[in-house]
Length: 404
Image (cartoon, rainbow, N blue to C red; front, side):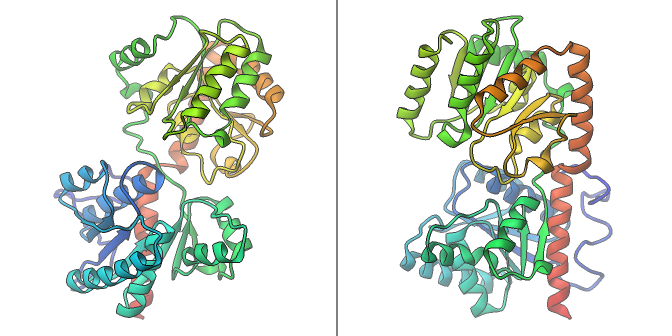
């Protein structure tokens, strides 16, 4: 892990000034629990924090149902304990609680950090029975339409410490649950500045993607990253492109349909109906998003429902790209309106078309100036190192509270 002012490492890659107390204290054991290790912000944050714990001399453990991201833990020598934690079946949740009790006892776990609701119930029960400290991270504003769903969600508000990934999520927690504001810590997600840096993306990587996607040369590229689901606003962007009326603009919708074949076909039909044939390319998940951002002229988040954080917009700014976002969710925290981003109302194709026209009309020099400001903005606030250091500080705080 790279070092910064928040978490410095010594010659052997260990923290010379221990995060978790002075000499003679046993390094803590921290168990993170989540449903799977497939993909997403919760999974990425879990692995990043596990690596930071190991770097700081602690013992990280991760329990999940498994997934392709588990190989990162294996490569680092971090124990991954496979349990059916994705299940919402009450009987399975109780069995998982007993399994976690044994893990807590066998490994001497000090803190259990839950990152999702079903595993959080198992973890909460296990911590009550063992005395391990229990904390949570709200990765989203968990909505509810009835009392039962609100009760199910409430386990995330039962942590001795609660991490909210944005001020927007913090406000949701306080509005929805009887939580002492003093136990909430806002820790924004962080990106890896070694990955999302324009100078680190070789031209060959961009050429490879452009060839695979058959991108025409010398045309502006409008990129919307995000899984294919209606609330991400792909339909709004297509309407905006039609309203823009420029045949020289190419649009990339990058994201897996996750089985939503009908919605994908709807987008393809919409593009044909709007006369955007040849201008819109819908592709699956991309494993080299840094190169994808480099290919873009402007990156769009057209979400119709609030984003709890908005990771792709932060990544795009780190890559020096001007962005357009909708005025809902955590956008006030992740962009500088009028400086690094244009902000438009959700579900407003006309406003989005206007913002696209403004950015596409900028000179290369003007876009580069926006990009430099965007990169500095992200570097100040949203790095992986800062996220990990702040999370480890919460662990240390919880341990100190337990000792007192």
